[in-house]
Length: 242
Image (cartoon, rainbow, N blue to C red; front, side, top):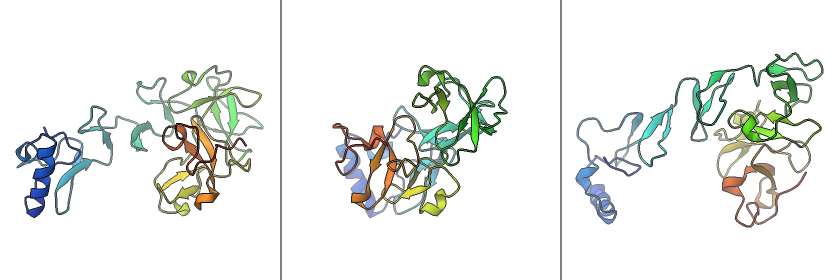
C-alpha cells in the first residue's frame, strides 16, 4: 500500500516530479500507482493534473497514519474528527454515540429537565435559554466526550461545547445562528467572540486572545494549536482573563 497522503496514478510530465519525490522517500512509483480501484475504502478520487485520493465526506484520516476510517452510526465529521450528532453523546472517549437527553433544551427559570440530567445550564448566546446536564462534577472525565466540568460559577456542571465552534466558514454569515459567531479569515472556522469584553466564556481547553492587533477581534482559541510553548496567543500577547 502507498503510505503517502495522496495516491498518484496519472502519468504525464508531472510524474517525473512525483517519481523523484517518491525516490527520495524510499518508495517506488509502482508502489503508489494503481490500475483499477484508484482509492482505498472510505476515500474519493481527487481530480487534477495529478490524480489522488482524499477521505470521503463521512470519513476522517486513520490515526495509524494512512487511509481513512468511516464515522460510525450517529456520528458526523467535525474539525477532522468523528463526533456525536445532536441528541447523542458518549459515556467515554472510546464508547459509541448513544441517544441521550443530556444537552436537550430547557429554561433555566423553570428547569424542566429529566431526572437523569436535572441541571439546566444557560447557553452562551442567551441566558434565558439553557440545556439539560448534570451538576456536581469533579473533573471533565465525569462528563460526555468533548464536554468539560465547569467550576467557574457557584455550581460545578458538565458544560456543552459552544454550537458552531470550529465549523468551516467563508464569512461570519456562515456562523450566524450559532454561539461561535465569528469567522476568522486565517483558518476559516467559526470561533466564539467577545470573551475579553465579558460577552462570552471560553470552553474547556480554549483561551481568550485579543487579536485586534492582527486585524481580528477577541476570540476563544484552542490551547493545543494556538497557544505557544510560552503560553502566548498568536501575535505574542498573553491570554486575556475576562
